[in-house]
Length: 260
Image (cartoon, rainbow, N blue to C red; front, side):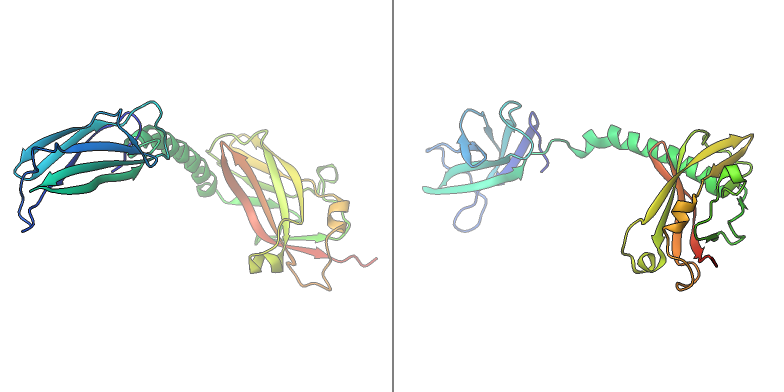
């Protein structure tokens, strides 16, 4: 049973004879019900025991709203006599909750609405026209950079991902992240981001444009191929909007070693 402070409750118990036949409890001594809070009897909480039918009883009460909190242990102990023999049972043993499922409904509805809005934005990005790639991004989405080279907008070499007919929330002004991890670590499910850069997002009519300036110091710090093989790194281009992370591209990155 899920209960929280302030809740009203009804419990039921049966009494049996030595022959396992339902029988009423003795009138004297009287049957008592006691609330046990965190292992200690709380006789100040009124509990009412009512006979429902032969051998069947109901206990009614209210969990105090003061002095009782979520996480507290709660039990109800019944002491009764049947045919002159004393008996004790616990029809309730539980831990108090802070919220019931019904209390969570508004919160869950709000979360669902936020998730639906975020999903709509992601769907708009992923279901629109294919992303157009600008050098040094290859047609398959992978990238090849020369170790130590600059790929910046000032040199008209900055990588760009452009999506035409974009119908999602405007991405103008959002911050874009460009992150790189070793390909072997990525495949093995280990490691972490080795290097990262911050890019930008803008809108040109209905086209979403994502750009990142990759500096020579950035490419120089990565190991070249050879000796490593092609796509020796994995890159991810992503942004966050309204709490949702959207990946623009996730593919191989080759750092080609300079000749001189």
